[in-house]
Image 1 (cartoon, rainbow, N blue to C red):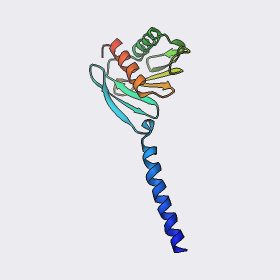
Image 2: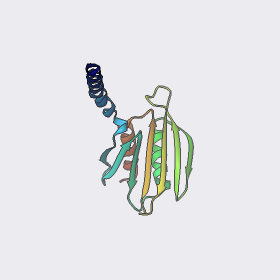
Image 3: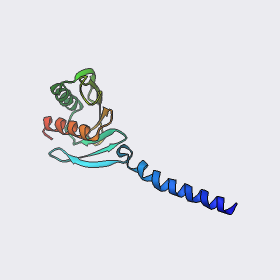
Length: 142
């Protein structure tokens, strides 16, 4: 009986050592932060969404216009777009041969006077999402 218990504990320990590193290696589960743009701006990626706060003086409408221009330049179709001084949303669909299906962008004015932008590309791709943010920041000269 005691040998069986020790064997079970050993088996659980081995399984944990094998499976735990695999679980930790999923990039979308860990927050990664990097500097982007010319200013630079800190942008964090977690669970498939890139989030950044743009500096005071940037308007939500300007951010959405820059995003729309960049997505159109890349060949996307804008399915939905709303904008106001408080915030806005944009949904763009990619071409059939693109490696992703859609892009969601949300903006909101923050109490600090800046604009929070969140970008999600489906399916998740941190590198593509960061490239899109860089292109939007370039259009805004940030």
